[in-house]
Length: 136
Length: 136
Image (cartoon, rainbow over all chains, first blue to last red; front, top):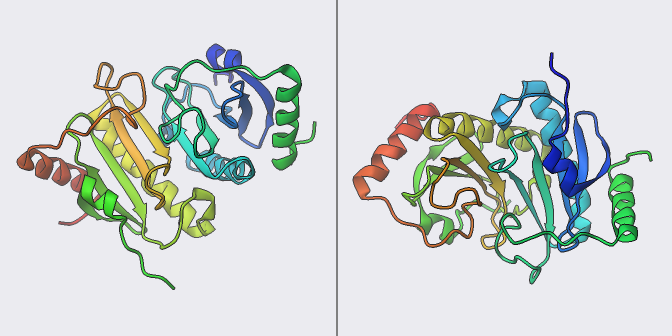
Protein backbone atom coordinates (compact mmCIF):
# COMPACT_ATOMS: atom_id res chain seq x y z
CA UNK A 1 0.00 0.00 0.00
CA UNK A 2 1.42 3.34 -1.09
CA UNK A 3 1.54 6.10 1.49
CA UNK A 4 -0.40 9.31 1.04
CA UNK A 5 1.65 12.38 0.11
CA UNK A 6 0.09 15.75 -0.55
CA UNK A 7 0.66 16.91 -4.14
CA UNK A 8 3.37 19.60 -4.19
CA UNK A 9 1.15 22.12 -6.00
CA UNK A 10 -1.57 21.78 -3.36
CA UNK A 11 1.00 22.20 -0.61
CA UNK A 12 2.43 25.29 -2.33
CA UNK A 13 -0.92 27.05 -2.77
CA UNK A 14 -2.43 26.45 0.66
CA UNK A 15 -2.08 26.65 4.43
CA UNK A 16 -2.89 23.48 6.40
CA UNK A 17 -6.00 23.55 8.61
CA UNK A 18 -6.01 20.01 9.98
CA UNK A 19 -7.09 16.44 9.37
CA UNK A 20 -10.68 15.21 9.55
CA UNK A 21 -11.35 11.46 9.71
CA UNK A 22 -10.43 11.00 6.05
CA UNK A 23 -9.58 14.33 4.48
CA UNK A 24 -6.75 16.75 4.99
CA UNK A 25 -8.27 20.24 5.09
CA UNK A 26 -6.32 23.10 3.53
CA UNK A 27 -7.04 26.80 3.25
CA UNK A 28 -6.40 28.11 -0.25
CA UNK A 29 -4.00 30.99 0.21
CA UNK A 30 -6.11 33.40 -1.81
CA UNK A 31 -7.52 36.38 0.03
CA UNK A 32 -10.14 36.89 -2.69
CA UNK A 33 -12.25 33.92 -1.62
CA UNK A 34 -12.89 31.93 1.59
CA UNK A 35 -11.81 28.64 0.04
CA UNK A 36 -11.08 25.24 1.56
CA UNK A 37 -9.64 22.19 -0.16
CA UNK A 38 -10.26 18.67 1.09
CA UNK A 39 -7.83 15.94 0.12
CA UNK A 40 -8.76 12.34 0.99
CA UNK A 41 -5.65 10.82 2.58
CA UNK A 42 -5.51 7.90 0.16
CA UNK A 43 -2.78 7.38 -2.38
CA UNK A 44 -3.32 7.08 -6.11
CA UNK A 45 -6.86 8.42 -6.50
CA UNK A 46 -7.92 10.85 -9.20
CA UNK A 47 -11.71 10.44 -9.41
CA UNK A 48 -14.53 10.50 -6.83
CA UNK A 49 -15.96 7.25 -8.15
CA UNK A 50 -12.67 5.48 -7.37
CA UNK A 51 -13.19 5.91 -3.61
CA UNK A 52 -14.10 2.83 -1.61
CA UNK A 53 -17.78 3.21 -0.60
CA UNK A 54 -17.01 3.85 3.08
CA UNK A 55 -14.37 6.44 2.15
CA UNK A 56 -16.79 8.05 -0.29
CA UNK A 57 -19.35 8.49 2.46
CA UNK A 58 -16.73 10.19 4.64
CA UNK A 59 -15.65 12.48 1.83
CA UNK A 60 -19.27 13.46 1.26
CA UNK A 61 -19.92 14.12 4.94
CA UNK A 62 -16.71 16.07 5.38
CA UNK A 63 -17.44 18.14 2.26
CA UNK A 64 -20.90 19.02 3.57
CA UNK A 65 -19.49 19.89 6.97
CA UNK A 66 -16.97 22.18 5.36
CA UNK A 67 -19.71 23.77 3.25
CA UNK A 68 -21.87 24.40 6.31
CA UNK A 69 -18.95 26.11 8.07
CA UNK A 70 -18.00 28.19 5.03
CA UNK A 71 -21.63 29.22 4.56
CA UNK A 72 -20.92 31.67 7.38
CA UNK A 73 -18.45 33.45 5.10
CA UNK A 74 -20.62 34.01 2.03
CA UNK A 75 -24.04 33.72 0.46
CA UNK A 76 -23.43 30.78 -1.89
CA UNK A 77 -21.25 27.71 -1.59
CA UNK A 78 -19.47 26.40 -4.67
CA UNK A 79 -18.28 22.82 -4.46
CA UNK A 80 -16.14 21.17 -7.09
CA UNK A 81 -13.80 18.31 -7.87
CA UNK A 82 -11.92 19.11 -11.08
CA UNK A 83 -8.31 17.94 -11.10
CA UNK A 84 -7.49 19.07 -14.62
CA UNK A 85 -4.24 20.59 -13.42
CA UNK A 86 -3.49 18.70 -10.20
CA UNK A 87 -4.51 15.08 -10.60
CA UNK A 88 -4.47 14.06 -6.93
CA UNK A 89 -8.13 13.74 -5.89
CA UNK A 90 -9.23 16.89 -4.05
CA UNK A 91 -12.42 18.84 -3.53
CA UNK A 92 -12.88 22.58 -3.42
CA UNK A 93 -15.42 24.22 -1.13
CA UNK A 94 -15.65 27.96 -1.68
CA UNK A 95 -17.82 30.64 -0.11
CA UNK A 96 -18.99 33.08 -2.74
CA UNK A 97 -20.36 36.58 -2.32
CA UNK A 98 -22.21 38.45 -5.05
CA UNK A 99 -19.73 40.84 -6.62
CA UNK A 100 -16.61 38.94 -5.53
CA UNK A 101 -13.58 38.86 -7.83
CA UNK A 102 -14.97 36.09 -10.05
CA UNK A 103 -18.74 36.51 -9.62
CA UNK A 104 -20.83 34.95 -11.11
CA UNK A 105 -18.18 32.82 -12.79
CA UNK A 106 -16.26 30.01 -11.13
CA UNK A 107 -13.18 30.70 -8.99
CA UNK A 108 -11.15 28.21 -11.00
CA UNK A 109 -9.29 29.98 -13.76
CA UNK A 110 -10.15 33.41 -12.33
CA UNK A 111 -6.58 34.67 -12.35
CA UNK A 112 -3.62 34.46 -9.99
CA UNK A 113 -4.31 33.96 -6.32
CA UNK A 114 -3.68 36.85 -3.95
CA UNK A 115 -1.98 35.48 -0.84
CA UNK A 116 -3.31 36.51 2.56
CA UNK A 117 -1.23 38.60 4.91
CA UNK A 118 0.13 35.94 7.29
CA UNK A 119 -1.89 37.09 10.30
CA UNK A 120 -5.12 37.04 8.30
CA UNK A 121 -4.40 33.52 7.03
CA UNK A 122 -3.76 32.36 10.58
CA UNK A 123 -7.03 33.88 11.77
CA UNK A 124 -8.98 32.27 8.95
CA UNK A 125 -7.35 28.89 9.58
CA UNK A 126 -8.31 29.19 13.25
CA UNK A 127 -11.92 30.00 12.31
CA UNK A 128 -12.14 27.05 9.94
CA UNK A 129 -10.52 24.67 12.43
CA UNK A 130 -12.91 25.78 15.17
CA UNK A 131 -15.93 25.42 12.88
CA UNK A 132 -14.82 21.93 11.88
CA UNK A 133 -14.16 20.91 15.49
CA UNK A 134 -10.45 20.41 14.83
CA UNK A 135 -8.30 20.76 17.92
CA UNK A 136 -5.20 22.84 17.29
CA UNK B 1 -44.86 20.63 0.96
CA UNK B 2 -44.02 22.52 -2.20
CA UNK B 3 -43.82 20.51 -5.39
CA UNK B 4 -40.58 20.22 -7.34
CA UNK B 5 -40.40 22.18 -10.57
CA UNK B 6 -37.30 22.25 -12.76
CA UNK B 7 -35.81 25.76 -12.99
CA UNK B 8 -36.67 27.27 -16.41
CA UNK B 9 -33.03 27.98 -17.25
CA UNK B 10 -32.04 24.35 -16.62
CA UNK B 11 -34.97 23.19 -18.76
CA UNK B 12 -33.96 25.58 -21.55
CA UNK B 13 -30.32 24.48 -21.67
CA UNK B 14 -30.75 20.73 -21.50
CA UNK B 15 -32.38 17.60 -22.87
CA UNK B 16 -34.00 15.26 -20.32
CA UNK B 17 -32.40 11.85 -19.80
CA UNK B 18 -34.59 10.42 -17.06
CA UNK B 19 -35.17 10.20 -13.31
CA UNK B 20 -32.97 8.26 -10.88
CA UNK B 21 -34.28 7.55 -7.38
CA UNK B 22 -33.80 11.16 -6.32
CA UNK B 23 -32.28 13.18 -9.14
CA UNK B 24 -33.57 14.22 -12.50
CA UNK B 25 -30.78 13.66 -15.02
CA UNK B 26 -30.36 16.14 -17.86
CA UNK B 27 -27.94 16.30 -20.76
CA UNK B 28 -26.47 19.78 -21.18
CA UNK B 29 -27.17 20.69 -24.78
CA UNK B 30 -23.59 21.64 -25.50
CA UNK B 31 -21.78 19.55 -28.08
CA UNK B 32 -18.39 20.74 -26.77
CA UNK B 33 -18.55 18.60 -23.62
CA UNK B 34 -20.24 15.34 -22.53
CA UNK B 35 -22.07 16.99 -19.62
CA UNK B 36 -24.82 15.77 -17.35
CA UNK B 37 -26.74 17.76 -14.75
CA UNK B 38 -28.39 16.10 -11.76
CA UNK B 39 -31.22 17.93 -10.04
CA UNK B 40 -32.51 16.49 -6.76
CA UNK B 41 -36.33 16.44 -7.06
CA UNK B 42 -36.87 18.43 -3.88
CA UNK B 43 -38.27 21.94 -3.78
CA UNK B 44 -36.56 24.93 -2.26
CA UNK B 45 -32.97 23.69 -1.97
CA UNK B 46 -29.94 25.73 -2.95
CA UNK B 47 -27.05 24.10 -1.05
CA UNK B 48 -25.80 20.52 -0.72
CA UNK B 49 -25.69 20.76 3.06
CA UNK B 50 -29.43 21.51 3.12
CA UNK B 51 -30.26 17.99 1.89
CA UNK B 52 -31.78 15.59 4.41
CA UNK B 53 -29.08 13.00 5.21
CA UNK B 54 -30.82 10.17 3.33
CA UNK B 55 -31.32 12.41 0.31
CA UNK B 56 -27.70 13.53 0.50
CA UNK B 57 -26.55 9.95 0.33
CA UNK B 58 -28.65 9.37 -2.77
CA UNK B 59 -27.33 12.50 -4.43
CA UNK B 60 -23.78 11.37 -3.72
CA UNK B 61 -24.39 7.86 -5.07
CA UNK B 62 -26.18 9.12 -8.16
CA UNK B 63 -23.42 11.67 -8.83
CA UNK B 64 -20.77 8.94 -8.62
CA UNK B 65 -22.81 6.68 -10.87
CA UNK B 66 -23.08 9.43 -13.41
CA UNK B 67 -19.35 10.11 -13.15
CA UNK B 68 -18.53 6.46 -13.72
CA UNK B 69 -20.72 6.40 -16.84
CA UNK B 70 -19.31 9.66 -18.21
CA UNK B 71 -15.77 8.42 -17.57
CA UNK B 72 -16.27 6.45 -20.78
CA UNK B 73 -16.48 9.74 -22.68
CA UNK B 74 -13.31 11.46 -21.46
CA UNK B 75 -10.13 11.18 -19.46
CA UNK B 76 -11.09 13.34 -16.45
CA UNK B 77 -14.39 13.90 -14.69
CA UNK B 78 -15.22 17.37 -13.38
CA UNK B 79 -17.95 17.49 -10.76
CA UNK B 80 -19.38 20.70 -9.41
CA UNK B 81 -22.28 22.31 -7.59
CA UNK B 82 -22.13 26.06 -8.13
CA UNK B 83 -25.54 27.70 -8.47
CA UNK B 84 -24.28 31.25 -8.82
CA UNK B 85 -26.60 31.83 -11.77
CA UNK B 86 -29.34 29.23 -11.28
CA UNK B 87 -30.07 28.86 -7.60
CA UNK B 88 -32.02 25.59 -7.75
CA UNK B 89 -29.68 22.92 -6.32
CA UNK B 90 -28.06 21.01 -9.17
CA UNK B 91 -24.80 19.17 -9.79
CA UNK B 92 -22.71 19.11 -12.91
CA UNK B 93 -20.83 16.01 -14.01
CA UNK B 94 -18.67 16.64 -17.06
CA UNK B 95 -16.30 14.41 -19.01
CA UNK B 96 -13.19 16.34 -19.96
CA UNK B 97 -10.62 15.58 -22.63
CA UNK B 98 -7.21 17.23 -22.78
CA UNK B 99 -7.43 19.95 -25.41
CA UNK B 100 -11.21 20.33 -25.26
CA UNK B 101 -12.75 23.77 -25.75
CA UNK B 102 -12.10 24.89 -22.15
CA UNK B 103 -9.09 22.73 -21.19
CA UNK B 104 -7.59 22.96 -18.58
CA UNK B 105 -10.04 25.55 -17.26
CA UNK B 106 -13.54 24.80 -16.00
CA UNK B 107 -16.49 24.42 -18.40
CA UNK B 108 -18.48 26.98 -16.44
CA UNK B 109 -18.05 30.40 -17.96
CA UNK B 110 -16.31 28.97 -21.03
CA UNK B 111 -18.52 30.76 -23.52
CA UNK B 112 -21.87 30.08 -25.15
CA UNK B 113 -23.00 26.49 -25.45
CA UNK B 114 -23.05 24.90 -28.89
CA UNK B 115 -26.25 22.89 -29.20
CA UNK B 116 -26.05 19.33 -30.54
CA UNK B 117 -27.61 18.40 -33.82
CA UNK B 118 -30.88 16.77 -32.67
CA UNK B 119 -29.91 13.25 -33.74
CA UNK B 120 -26.59 13.47 -31.88
CA UNK B 121 -28.32 14.70 -28.72
CA UNK B 122 -30.78 11.80 -28.95
CA UNK B 123 -27.93 9.31 -29.33
CA UNK B 124 -26.04 10.76 -26.37
CA UNK B 125 -29.19 10.73 -24.22
CA UNK B 126 -29.70 7.08 -25.13
CA UNK B 127 -26.09 6.26 -24.19
CA UNK B 128 -26.40 8.02 -20.84
CA UNK B 129 -29.75 6.45 -20.05
CA UNK B 130 -28.41 2.99 -20.88
CA UNK B 131 -25.31 3.56 -18.75
CA UNK B 132 -27.45 4.70 -15.83
CA UNK B 133 -29.86 1.78 -16.20
CA UNK B 134 -32.75 4.07 -17.02
CA UNK B 135 -35.48 2.39 -19.01
CA UNK B 136 -36.68 4.53 -21.86
